[in-house]
Amino acid sequence: MQHVEQVVEATELDAAHEVLNATYGHMRLKSGVEHPHIWMSSQVNGRVRFDELHGRIGIEVTVDPMHNYVFGHAGAGMVYYGSGGEDRFWLPGEVFLSAPPDSSFVGAIVDPRLSTVTLPQSVIDEVADGARFTGFRPVSSPAATTWWSTCVHLRDEVLTRFEDNPLVTANATHLLVAITLATFPNTTSAEPTPADRRDAHPKSLRRAVSFIENNAARDISAADVARAARVSIRALQLAFRHHLDTTPMAYLRRVRLSCAHDDLRAGNGSVTEIAARWGYARPSVFAAHYRAAYDVAPSTTLRSG
Image (spheres, rainbow, N blue to C red):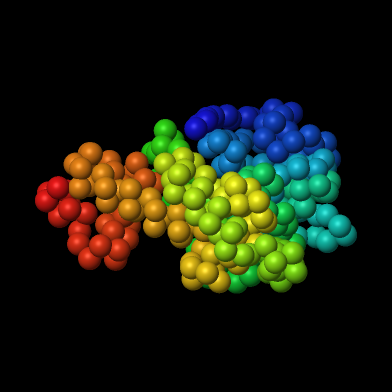
């Protein structure tokens, strides 16, 4: 798992411009204060990037298409984006999608405390193949609050601490995509196609189940399972819902929980170690899921193994 952290500071306009240019793609300076002071930190976890920008600065730029989705949280100051003939101003406490990934736009910041999360389309496709975001504002204030608190938790507590654990980091990345899809308008609400309904048959399900059970210890996504079953992600989801009353990822969690159960009985590590081995960053969540499945605490199984 690639994990890179970088902190930079700039006190000249040209230097501030270069910092932003290196982070978000090619941009042309339109105007700016003469003596800015900015501080930026970046954290890259695999294909997901988190950036923090603080400072005393006023700058306006024209930005080429970023080819990624960049979501943000304004903690202080003012943030502005303009694209497609629409002006969007973001104030403290608001979360947003900056601009369509394939569109150029105008951006401006004034004395910001800005946090951004960059997601490439390839990561989104692992959860919802072909999904596209269609709106810049969250669907509700509670959804926005949950999205931002989840981003902070995953960034600060999970992806940093478990950078060498592929299952934990994959689960965290997929959770980040899933909650972003639940927060911002997108195309996943479209009805399944006739082809999806036709492909959601027991043979597809058997191929998917076999792949999951044989690869539960690997970092696999819904897209990987769908490819193994030779159907679309939507058809895969239909098959699991119609025939097993669950989802592909819930079934994967059930299989991994069974593997953890076997490890506990064999004494293959502590509860915390076994939980992390099978994708749980928080032992308390593992314990709750385990108790729900086996009606006993994991520590009890470990002691009696």
